[in-house]
Length: 286
Ligand code: NDP
Image 1 (cartoon, rainbow, N blue to C red):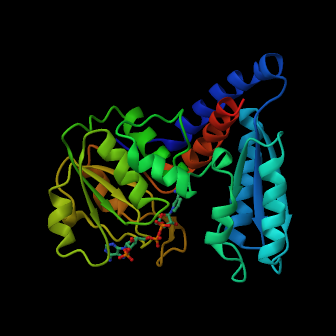
Image 2 (cartoon, rainbow, N blue to C red):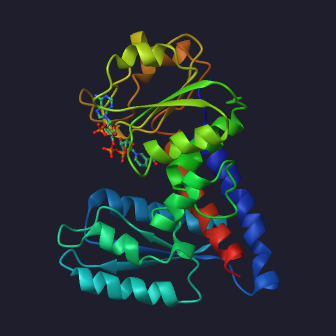
């Protein structure tokens, strides 16, 4: 099965739209996401434009604060403080990467954890690692891992006792997704660039989550029959220049029980998770 992330994303946005339509009467307004966009990174501009479009489709308010590439750390901190204290802002996304002169850790440390829609603050990282079962209503987990889990659930994949291999150990994808898989009772191995004999690990895996950032890195000889694969990677195909994942989709797909394509798999759901996290902050902070 090739998982249709676009279709699920449309369904989630339609359902959010129905839900948020009732909010003005119930709560006086709809949830508001504020995106802090510092600088002119091309990928960031495109992502934020998609956030604005999808927020409208989900019935959320989205305010983008644009700051110039040469903004100082102090200026970014001051802007963030305004958003932290603004009662009409429920969720804050600090769009990465930040310009070189702005220390990312200093900015994350200043973000109000109650408005941290991508689960990046120390408080929310600790919350994630302490909870034994996934309960998304209590605090925000990072959007892409939440989406990966949403896909597995929507596809009806039973994770209990399964061997899962997560390739990649970043704070924003690999590590949180490994914890969410553990919460569902999968036995999880986290692989990285120093892992020995990755193909042998992957061939034994029931579930593979690829978050590497290397085009078509996982080839058909590395994957066992009937694997379930969630491909988080976003890369440019060196042969065609088109977007592709970390998995060699054309040669792997027909051997899998389920695989997510790139584009059209995890990507469309990441912004949905951002909207859901914003909605959840709104409801929690009331
Ligand atoms: P990072 O660069 O932070 O992490 C990449 C990870 O891959 C590292 O842990 C690295 O290991 C590991 N790795 C690199 N080379 C190998 C190798 N040869 N064998 C095994 N592991 C290796 O990337 P991110 O986690 O931020 O992103 C991963 C991918 O996901 C990227 O393509 C990114 O664009 C995409 N992405 C997609 C999103 C979406 O919504 N679809 C959202 C966020 C990211 P080590 O730690 O040892 O260096």
